[in-house]
Image 1 (cartoon, rainbow, N blue to C red):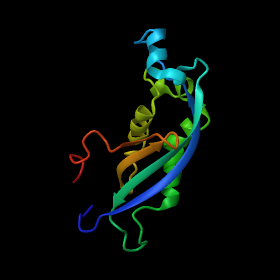
Image 2: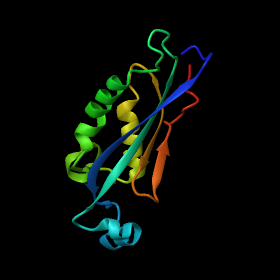
Image 3: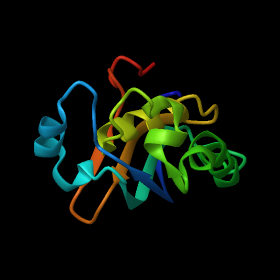
Image 4: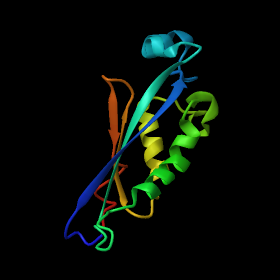
Length: 146
């Protein structure tokens, strides 16, 4: 990226998934106290909204940072195919030993999308409910810049 003109692209995606907030590091009582109704043994579901923010140079030929069809296909392959209509605890390897909080989900989606070749991933925002959303910009976002 030349740095002369920075443009950010925002794209929104949706998926539904269930999870149970529970960890073997806590007793049953502690899990119930910490996670409340989200510790339901049968889990519960959300309709997640994921906002992907990318930046890059505007291609003089296309006038775009990235082709939206290419970005959509990448997000489908890297995220939606694995997470949509799944149990995060049972169906997603990344959450077999990690509590599938939306904070952890946000970081997992970031890791899955940071290799998009046409633009730089700036941040991921995941909305779990109308009241809860989480944003992640990598471990060291300033250190990743050219």
